[in-house]
Length: 339
Image (cartoon, rainbow, N blue to C red; front, side, top):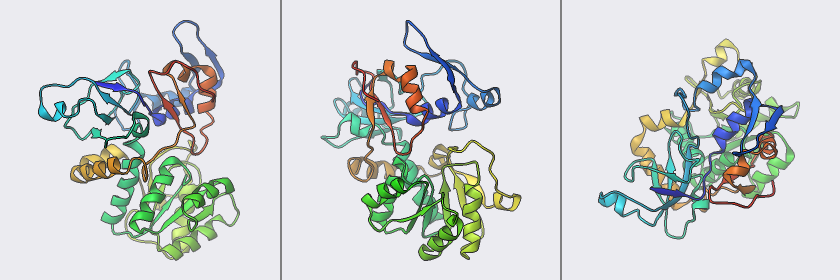
């Protein structure tokens, strides 16, 4: 039994809100919840989880969280976790006051003494994804990376990893203030603004400078993936095989990649990578737990209760999907937060 105090699963909530038509949303009385229409063309996409499995019936959402272990079975591994803060990972179940988890599995991450549930609440999705990117880069013969949405929490983690591991990194941003976030972490950060008319030329120069030959793009749709692949060609950094992974759909419009460019691109999913790299996953879990307050620290805009999280006013805040903003869900919290 895990008492969840620092729940967080912004990605599922973000995906749900992203397809809602909040202009016609309305609050309900009684049990706290809000309702909104989903555009018909997007209803089909909601049948699937972010990890490729089909949703059947009612589910408790939340793919990661943390808390204090308050009950355990007779197994010595489970007994050793009593009273400890652990992070948990899995397809749902973390938007709850209690959650069962297998103590000795690769979905339970014990934390060092002194780490709080709040600090451990985002220990899997972003940290393990960022480390997975680096592992994929190395295993596929690349030596430097390009990342989009670079000022996001995941992007900031990847930058800190690359600093520690001496990996050249090109950061694609949309605004000067996002570049400032990254420069505060690393004054020597290489940033390229995708909003500038010279973006592809600027990106090609950065690729040449760093010898980057692999990119991870969070947008999925729109022109950005095509622009990145064009920049590789312009920089003379084209390689055989895949050179771009999409790992999100921040842009839900159709990708402008050409047929030939699509042959250079694929989709990167954490569960798929985990299934093929179980030993490395265990090594990464140890690194994340040891560095959860430094390299893999997550900052939150606010800590909200479960009842506040489903109010219309809160949903309208989440629906803005602002870069770098995350909200910590705490089932035990009773006082509303200022959003």
